[in-house]
Amino acid sequence: MSADHVTLPDSSRLLRELDLRTPVIGLYDAPDPEPFAPLVAPPKGPGRGPCLFNYYRRWEKGETLHLTAQAFGCGGCGRSLFGVQVRERDDFIDFLWKDEGLRASRELMAGWVDHAPTYHPEHANILVGPLKPDLADHLKSVTFWVNADQLCVLQHGVYHHHAWGEPDPLSVPFGSGCSELIQFPDLQKPHAMIGATDIAMRDGLPKGVLAFTVTVPMFEQLCALGDESFFVKGFLARLRKARGGSLA
Image (cartoon, rainbow, N blue to C red; front, side, top):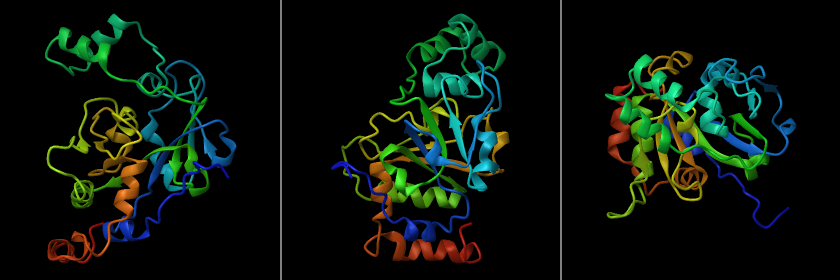
């Protein structure tokens, strides 16, 4: 075992306090996909195949989505996770601005296209699926699928150790749903992101569900919340009572 081997923290209390019944998903950047089996993958070819989030039901079954630069599903995923461009720049800008109406002007849309970050994989395989503690060395982010109440609990947890004047630990960036699973300023620092806000991909998710994605350091902080936190104070207890005993 290497000195920098990553050990996932015990998340049982956090999931219990959230009353979470949806799968917790990890995004992995790994050299070998086989340990993540059972696997499912989109067809090979540029921009072919369904949206990443259409595999939500497969995650519920315990399967892991295997993506590569040759088989990534939709073009937005190829761009966000692998830097693969399936459209020419001007065509892409016109598609987002004119066809999808995502910015007030072509110039604004061009600014986002030219400067929005893309992920640069360390290995050939991106795996998105249930958390696998034995493969935590390759884990890049953790995603909770939450309703509004559960999102609020996680938001409180994210700010539990935040000092005034420090960089904000929570963001709601504009981008494709898949980009919201990985595009953090620094994966080595505690940070969280509210995602699944891309309306083009939301039909792959249950109604009312949002993604709350965190870096591994933030996941560790959230899992460390205990009796000193708001978990055992009055607000959360009253909210759970108002919801009939469960936040789910």
